[in-house]
Image (tube, rainbow, N blue to C red; front, side, top):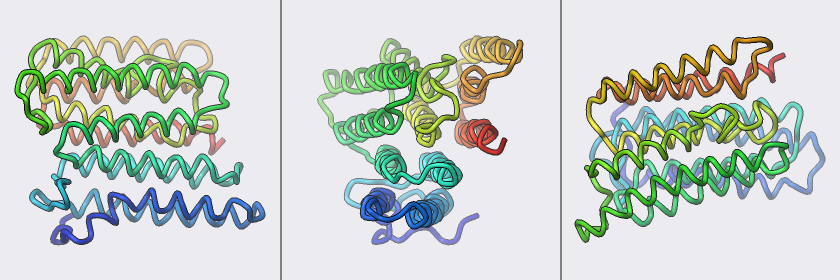
Length: 301
């Protein structure tokens, strides 16, 4: 689906639109619960439309003030943002507080900017904002420290690996290739950020309030994997498949739990991306969508 691509002057709406929606949601905070619910669902609808536009209207070469909209990163970011707003809309039926949806909007803009920036320091800054917004939105949950710790450590690993390239190249652009140790540190950080370990990162507390931002962390993990571009790593992909299968088997023993079953889309998608790098965007979309379905299932019940 390609409707001609985004003109340059429309890019700020897709990149900063979710953050603007957050400000509008905070304005509705003093209102009664039914008006807050309407505001949350209206913002979610607009956020989904912005995400769809970013995912399907981006074309290579569209740029705005140092932000470049390439097809694959924008598709991943758009799907992740759309899924996050979908979870926000579903959660509005049982929770009308606007603080968590507002933080999701901030995290969504941070993800969009992370996917499109071409400069190293802004990329790292936006990644930190994304994780901080996720940590704030998940605060108050019984296992929120595990969520914040895993996401924070994973982001720190990716940031350290990318920042170390400056020492070698003295260039501030996002690197297009990494050395062996940098690549493995960044790859491990991306997996930890996306929640490859059960009961950690975005899956630390299942589908309870605060999980709305989980698709954004999964999207960020694949975006970093796309940036790293390690090439074909068949044996690494095979190891990841074994890890994913073991986690899924653990989840199916006894009473299945979201905390154990939700990571398998991520590790499966990572395995596909490492084995067939050209399929990274497809694997990312499938993993984000599958994780969102798993998070929606408890809400539906």
